[in-house]
Image 1 (cartoon, rainbow, N blue to C red):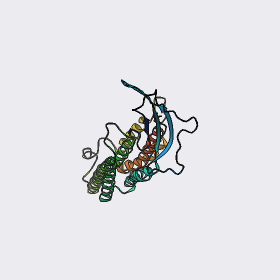
Image 2 (image 1 turned 45 degrees about the horizontal axis):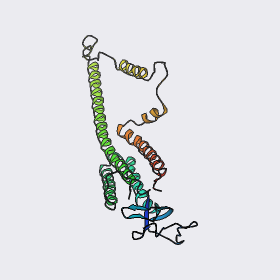
Image 3 (image 1 turned 135 degrees about the vertical axis):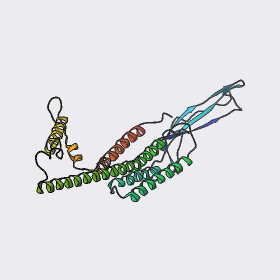
Length: 287
């Protein structure tokens, strides 16, 4: 059996009938001209459906003479509904469930880790069960491509949380440094005000206490540099609606989750279109 397109494949069963005791000089088999093969109307198979058949002759020549032979090739199409319900739909559900992690809070570490690990183990168990039910072959089957890509998506969702967790800790450290800097500036300004109120600060000894570059000048420089970075060579701004929307999320961890909510389903939809258009259009030239 060729399982390269499993479970979207077709299998051919060949039946031969001949005589090896009588040569063609004594006995010749011929197919009846009209309706040579008759199939029972209520024929039912558990996993296959008879699609078509082809009749042919298979005369064989040996040292003792030529012997008459008849051959019929029966093309069976595998019933796909069983595999759709037991394999494809559950795999899709597992992949979609793994995306729930993108909608959970970045600080919900136990929930996101449990969800990612559970879906990954379930997907791996289902892949192992599918492979155990099929004979081992040296080529890649259609079901292997499907389960492999689904397993990759589930694993990618788990890795995405690792990146979100790292970005969340980085955001927390950055916010902590901002608060410390702001507190230091407030304490420094309060000290300057106290010295000015006591008459200990004048224009001559206040030079060392003042920053070399005013804060307003630094802000203007940064904004000007940002504006110049957003200009193309032709003077057109490069900021798009997508960047504006992403820019509304100040935390990098939140940005990663928001982008993943769009990228993962979009890529999975593209994979589905490519997968089904590729394997459904392939036809076994077995008959």
